[in-house]
Length: 198
View (tube, rainbow, N blue to C red):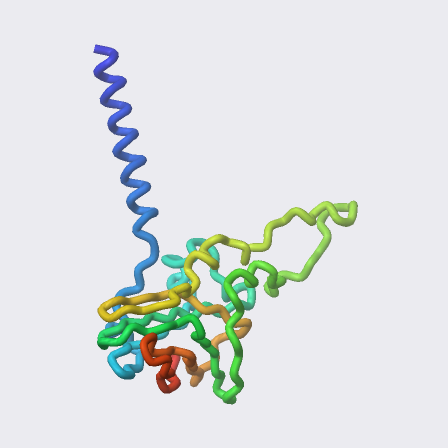
């Protein structure tokens, strides 16, 4: 009788662990580019963008971390290749253009962790200087890099998504400028894409 109870308990634990693993593996899925309000289409390529500002918006992608609180604006870029050409994204460049037409280059995801958070001044709480040195930078969260845009090629019928990070607040009237997308066969660069971020 006891061994049956143990087997049943072990089976329940295994099912719970497996369900938890399945939930984690699902990850962040933003949906198709064609479903976004802010998008542009060029030669069969649909490019969409969305600014993530509020805790409600950032939670599905970054969990408890809201990068905006530390001076970093995450902008999601989603691409959907509905054309017949393979697209090369190795030279992709994404810039945030504010309402005054200033172009702000994105921060490489691997460098975001080295930014100094801007929300709190550095105040020594310990009587001995240097004791608080071990505190982790919240921008060092692994989601910053794992959610970053990383695709280098985009075959027909495929899609790609990921975040670009900017050292900026969101500005009404801003847009995203996307350049450097090339047709893999010919090397011909597509015309630049501007996506309003309303």
